[in-house]
Image 1 (cartoon, rainbow, N blue to C red):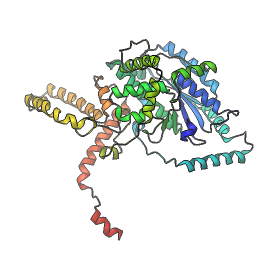
Image 2 (cartoon, helix red, strand yellow; image 1 turned 30 degrees about the horizontal axis):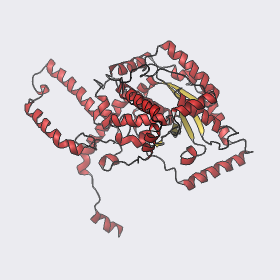
Image 3 (cartoon, rainbow, N blue to C red; image 1 turned 90 degrees about the horizontal axis):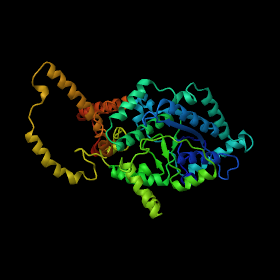
Image 4 (spheres, rainbow, N blue to C red; image 1 turned 135 degrees about the vertical axis):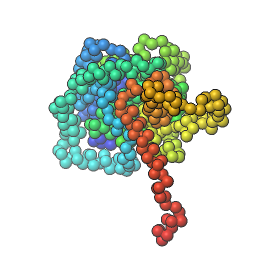
Length: 457
C-alpha cells in the first residue's frame, strides 16, 4: 500500500498512532518487519510511536491506569522505536495554534520520489557499506534522545494534574449522549496526536484503521451529517491539517485478516476499555452501525468490501467560494473546510430548506417581544443579564466556527465552558479577526482589469 502510493519519502519521520488494539499492533509489527535487514522491500522512513492514555475519559481508576501503562511500556520497549506516551488530559494545556492549518509543502511528482530514493541510496554508499544505512543511525539517535528526554516514557502519561483530570471528567460527564462522547473523544485524541507530531518533527501520522472499521466509519459519518468529508475521513491520506498528513496503510485489511496475522506471528496487544465497552447495540450511532455491518457481513461476506470500494471512489473536492479561500474557514473541532452557508444550513440542502425555514422564523419573530431583558430594568437584574448574554455570545462564536456535523454533536453539550481553553481561545481570535476584516473591507483597494492592463504594458 505504501509502495503503491509513494506518499512517504526516504528518511521522513513518521509517527505511528498505537492504541494497543489488534489493528494498530499489526501495523506496528509490519513496520518493524519492513525495517529489518531481511525484508525484500525495505521501508526507508524513520518511525516513532505515540500512545494516548484515555483512562480518565473512559472511567478507569488510577490503579487500573498504572497497570495499563506498565503493560504499554513493556510492549513498546520491545519494538526499539522511540515512543511517546501522553494522557488525554494534556489537551487542556494545548496551544490554540494546534487548530491552525499551515500550508502543505509540495512533495512533487513521481520523478521527485525516484530522485529522493536515488539520493538516499547514494548517501548509504557514502557512509560505508550498504548494510549500515543512515536510517539505522537516525533511529539510534532518536532512541538516545528519547532516553535523555526528561519527559521520557512513563513521565509523560503519568503526569496529568488533578485539575486536568477533574476538568476532563467534568467535560465528558456533561455530554448527554454516548454518540457525542465518542465523537468528542476522537476529536481530542486527534488534536493531541497532531500536537505531538508537530512538536517532535513528524510530517506523517499512521493510523491502524482497518477496512472493516473504515466501512463502519463511512456509514456512521453519513448518519451524523459528515457526508461532505467522507473522502478525508476514510481515504488513504488525509491532508486537512496541512503540514501533517494522516495515512491509513491498514485500510486494505479486514479485521479477520488482522486477527489471523496477529495469531500467526504472536503480535502482542494491550486491551483497554473504551467508552462503548459492554454498551448495548442502540447505545450510540457508532454501536448501532457497527452491529448492523458486522451482522450483515456474517450473512453476506462481500458487505465490507462493497462499502470499502465505494469509499475509494470518493474524490476530495474543496468547496468553491469565500469559505474555501479563507485561512480561518476550517472547523474548530474536526478541522475540515466549513460546509455551512451564510444562512447557517449545510450546503447540500441549504437551498431546499431556506424557503421552508422562513415561515416559522417569521411567526416566532412576531410573537417575541421587541426589547431584550438587558435594555430594561437595572441593578442586579441588569448584571445578571449581561453575564448571561456574554455566555451566549461566547457560545455563538464557537458554534459559527463549526461544520454541520460538529454543530449537531455540540447540541448534546449543555454548555461549551467545559471545553479545553485552546478551542475557546481560537474561536475568540477568529471572531475578532473576522470583525476587523469586516471593518477595513471598505478601505481595501482591489486591482481591476482596466487598471492592470496599463501596468502590464
